[in-house]
Image (cartoon, rainbow, N blue to C red):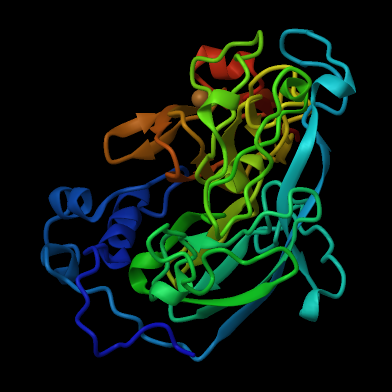
Length: 410
Ligand SMILES: [Cu+2]
């Protein structure tokens, strides 16, 4: 079922990739280092006439089918996950015990057809990544492709409804995955535990780049085991019926920093995404430069209010917290490197890599701000060997785990 009508002049954002890519080529000049994430407005300003489409503020970003279908079989699985399995922060030397850093995660994993068995990890530039759950598999397609995702909810722990909501691609409402209380039975917005749903999204020229996908089903409240002895807390809600949490049941915040914590105890929208249901969509076109190494990195937050077994709020990189638990990325001098960086959660983050800079519309940078659910695509030619770190430059986030290694070895 095609989810897009090429004849329909729907008012979508005027964001053609052509102008952006033309500028990219202009700035790189076939050159050694570049990283560009530019809006069409910036591109039109910086390179007027680079592409006629970029100059039309009312341009429609239409789907021109390639005939290819990218098919994925995704399942939401719940499992106990230790965010710091080596028990140590490689930066500060702080130590942790497993019971302080383990919670019940939910993650998307890619399977063989009909959800037969999990696909193996593939960290290559065209691969799905670790496929370990947090984040979910990288969903890849080219402009003109249809992405078809067969989704099954196997959340045996929470038994909540879940969904998949994509960014960047084009879809109709039955393929949006976003739950609303005034239309709670819209298809695909709250797939019950044990149920399944197939989403179809199309990739337009304006889809080129890095985009998050995530759970966007009905809000849920976490049952607080610690609070249940003093006052019975709300059980997880029945999903389609909506919110069952009561503010009066909320336990007081635990001892850790709560500066940007989610609401404690009440129903939380996108709590599935907070617990791990998210991943990256990577869309390319013929002008996307090939790379030797591609890193997919999510900065995301997890509040102990929503994962009560955690000793404190944690700030994570791909489900891992603290250096040597967060992923270690590797490259060699001469490699063409691409980072696809995304964020999810309540906080703004600053993506920073030691020893490296990349070029943007504003010139060379080594740190860039990302709001919630935004992305960066950073590209450069590796030329600086060393045992580096990448991290969020908000000190409180770094202290709660948002840092990892980047090793460039000869
Ligand atoms: Cu941050």
